Image 1 (cartoon, rainbow, N blue to C red):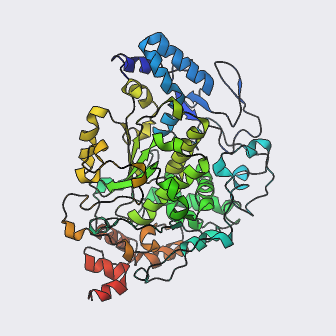
Image 2: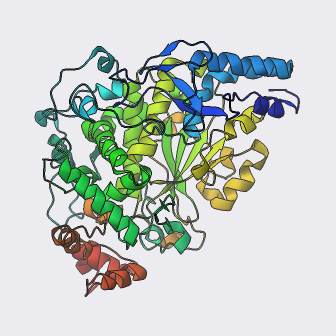
Image 3: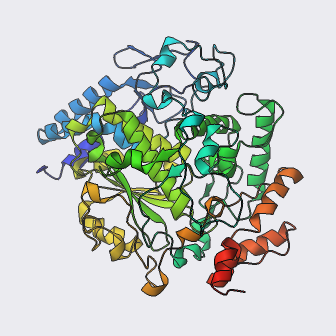
Length: 575
């Protein structure tokens, strides 16, 4: 931007503070769906004193007890005014102030979490009534207030009826376990699975799921840190692995909370809904083991994932080829790389189209590129190149916020690291203050001069586009789908061993198992399935500790085929 070096300091000093000196850097695009209906705790801007309606964006102080709120208009004006006062050259930095809500989201601030208020009962007669009324037919009555009618388009997408369900083209090599067509399962919430729901007609990459990925044995740090009382959990691998005592206790409390409510499940039913059963610990960790917030996140899954599926690439092909979000390669630990080119957000005429693309892309990664217990996470690479004032429309901001909510709430626990590039250097220090304390080691704004160095510490050069420090050709938007994967992500295999094995797997392989010991019934459900999983040696040993014997680890391709696809093992002579 041609600005002098003192602009970074100017932007840092431009941050608003409350009367007690705490930075005002927490953004919410609207109130939580279960808040603000009674009018008991009205919000007003501390600068202009205007009322902040529950559907209006607002900023608040970082200290949860201050209850210091500022409306979006005042926040932009005051920040821009401080920039002008700090430096004449900083006037040009004012162009970035309307984009601050998007940057707050990218920094990891969570839309669905409020800290300063007690839980409110709603006029509808229950904590979750406003959300459930538009989640699914039969979930609740459809009488809604005027405020509820103003929900985002993601809340108003019509539910696909049974006769509209698309048919999935199955492969003869794929099946050794009985299964229903995945897309048919979304006709009813009781059968909607935790993984799947895509119809893919375009060919997969020939390196989508190579042996080095299905056999990858993660080192201990890749599992993350299990939750312990008083300390937030940062687990990354949740499936096909032993859970801590505290995590099991949290799941027990979660089960009991479901048993006592009658909106998500029938009253007295403590089982997690099928569509979230494998994700229960991820949801609980995202809610910081607060079961009330975890229950609300289940409804987010229902409303922002289940209701939208199935999705077919032939219906989305034009939008997929706009290159807003796509998969490209893997890092040295086999995590697939999710690229988000934010400037391309303006190519979408509706929020609905953009949200469908984001859902399709992320679900594709879980359904086809992950291996439970081995590779369960991705690297998020956010590119802000050419992002400017023209992108700060209400529609674009809403798309970005909804996409980020899908990343953080629906696909929670999937993001291993976030790398953000092309952020103008004069506001990098300012925006860094938006990163929550528990995510400072997860989110990084990378300076242009450091881009290649930082990225090549994580990736082999042939896994990245040139613009990100690699030696792959930079992709035009229309070249981003079908998604690109490449051999030898770890840098230690031969190319002859890297052909994809995706055609030999099914949905059950990519689902994995959550080792939930809430009851003998729950435990027996997953014990019957875990024997068909390709387990690491450490996982097999952990099963023995839980009293599950006769489960062998999968350490070579012969064993892998025998477990995952016996018919193919027999064809190859693996006896």
